[in-house]
Image 1 (cartoon, rainbow over the protein chains, first blue to last red):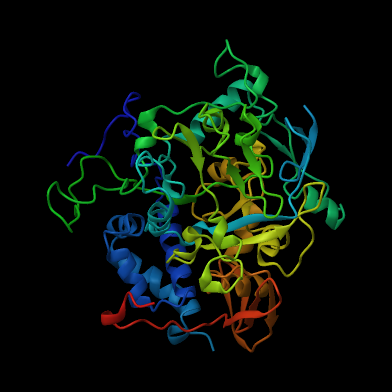
Image 2 (image 1 turned 90 degrees about the vertical axis):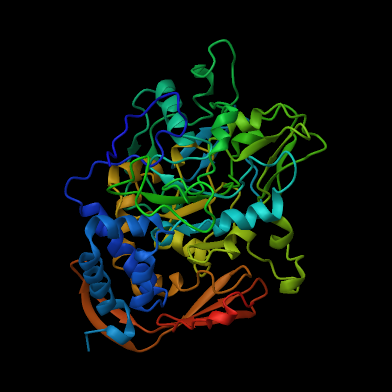
Length: 92
Length: 429
């Protein structure tokens, strides 16, 4: 599907949900890592954090999963859990 | 116009009325890093205050998707454009002297704003050359109020299919890189633009808590407040021909809700937040417009000590009392325009939180009653590590919250365990 669409100035809805240029994808990784860390800090178990990314009801997190792929998100959540999830902490 | 002192700008500024500060000021902090855009706050407000005829377009609390979302549509982009037109290239800041004393830093924590505010740019006539304004602003068109940002990121469901959502087939492109949710309510500004612009003096700021209200008996619906509020949180109601706005759930803030037995209570939108991104309280004010030093008030700590929470578009000059912990993944240039020059410091402090900050962040949404003071009981060291390239030590401290009268509200630990309700009792209270 072609996902490009030029903005139309007289259409008040046209600029909702247009893409922002980020060639390295670094912002997206940072965003996913931020969510993983925040919700682990709230006390969510890693599986429940992963479920946030899997749910299309949360387009921001779900968009990161669709773009970066499941293995990347899994690794991001696992890395954050090593610091912020007591049951998964790897530091003594 | 008289001069008033705006601590967020670090300088005096012109305002149509003399400086007059409330005894206490309603204020809030929202942590954008946690917001997933569930819109629970939006619906809590809607179902409490704006469900009647003529209020269909009103969303006193809303969550919009940045950079392109907005309610009303493009409100901030339009205001920034007007301000730039009135004062080309003027939205810049100068650094403050870091050797200044604590009181001076509270008076200018972000440096000094060099440009014009919406009050100082009012005589530029860039909105309507034929008319003068008390405040630089614009009146949104009716269509611009029609997009309250519910489900703006993706279509929620195929037409006619209830309980479903579109799983990939989109007619418009998605955000591919970064975006974030900006939750907004009225900022109950210290220098409200709505109040400044009202030709009937129908808008007033309560001396007991700084909440800004519109007197429905005096309002004649001229919509000058709608035009002037840079955050577009005053709205016109055609059925009553008056303007209405967020009332900060003042019966709750006054403590008249029977649930709390007289204790001041946080607003509906704050209390409903399931992402635990919000904290609302009352801070003490000096007559010069700065906050009274109140080291153990969590809002004072987040805004003036840790400096992780920043005002939204401080350059507008209204001294908003809503503060945001900026999202750490968003390009800094965008954030500096939105939250001022304190962004880099705030994100640096937030990403590797110090011991006290980590404890204070645990206070968010543990109780509906307003926290006036906190104390920390030191706990054991849990572990040391490195996060984001910096050394970090986690302590399992206990943070204790107190109400207006000094009674303990609750205590919680940094490593507070999470208990999940069983599926059959998900909605139990």
